[in-house]
Length: 402
Image 1 (cartoon, rainbow, N blue to C red):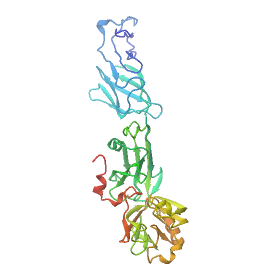
Image 2 (image 1 turned 60 degrees about the horizontal axis):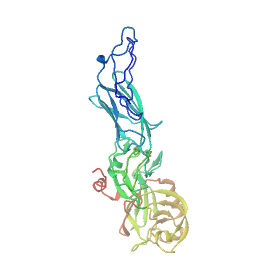
Image 3 (image 1 turned 90 degrees about the vertical axis):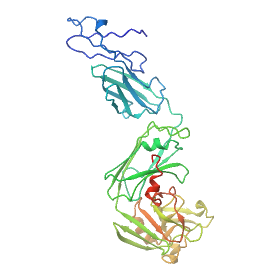
Image 4 (image 1 turned 135 degrees about the vertical axis):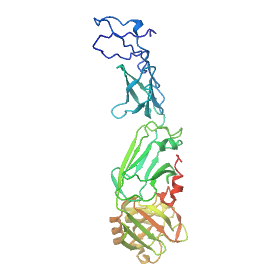
C-alpha cells in the first residue's frame, strides 16, 4: 500500500464528516485524519500545507487469530477520542472507558476466544471508521454448574455454589469474575474447596445465615477467562438469581434422638427419631448440614455407601443432607427406636406421618444443626454444603483474593 497520506475532499461550509481512512488490513484501525477548508467552490483538493495534525488510530488486537484473554485497547496518536464501541453479535458488546487525556480507550472486560469483533471509533473532530478482528478458538473449554437454580426460593443457609468441569489453576482470575449482589448488602465471602466429586468448587456464604426476603444475584462474567492449561477457557457468562425464604432451622439432638423444626424462632414440629448407630461408620455426622434436595421416594442400597449388603429399600420422604448419603426420611421399620436410641445406618429416620410433615414444610437450603456426642465427626465442607462448620474467619481465608 502507498505510504502517501490519504487526501480527503471536503466541501465548505457544510463541514461533512471526515473519515479515518484505513491504512492497513481491515483488521486494524490505522488512519490519518485531515480536516482543512476547501476552496470557496467546495471542489478543490486539500493542499499539503493545510493538513490537520496526524490522528492515527490503532487497535492492539489484529488479524483473524488474535490472542484472547486481554482487554481491547484503542489508541489515538493525536487529538481526542469521542466514542468507541466494540461489538460481537447481539450479546457480545464490550464496554470500556476513554482515558483522561482522550488518547486511549480500554475495554472493561477481556476479549473472549473464538469471537469476531467489530470496532467503531469516532474522534472529537468528527472522524470515524470501523474495522474488525477475530480471536483464536479455545483449545479447551471449561464449564460449570450453579446452585441454587434460577428464580428459586431457598432456606437461610443455602450458599451460592459453583462446580467446575475442569481444574481451575488461576483461582484468583475466576473469583474476580464472580459478582454477587444482594438486596440488603449482605456481607459474605467466596471459599475454594474440593467438591465430593473431586472437582474444583467455590462457594459464597454470608457471614451469618441469610435474612429472610434477601434477593441474591450472581453474575459470573467468565467469558474470556483462562482457568489454566488443564482447565481451559470459559466461552460464555453465567447468571442465577434467588430469594431467601422464611427463617427455618431443623435442630437434631443425636443424644436425645429427637429433632425440632423452628420457624422464625418458634418451634413448629417436635419429632422423635432414630439416627445413626454410634461407635462406627454407621454413626451420623455432627455439625451443620444444609438440605440439598427433596427427592421423594428413592431406592437406597447400602452398597452405594460402602456398607455391604445391609439394606436395599424403597424409602419415602427422602431429604438429602450430604453427598455421602446422609438423609432425613421415613423409616417405619425402626419405629421401636424413635426417641429412644440411634440404630440406623447413618440417616435420620422417623415415622411416615412425621416424615411427611417435615418434608412438607422444609425447603432446600434449610440448615440441619446436628449436635451430640453420638456422632462420627463433623461433615466436611465439600460433602454437601458444609461451609457453616467453619468459623467466619476460617471460611473467608479460603478466598483466592485474601
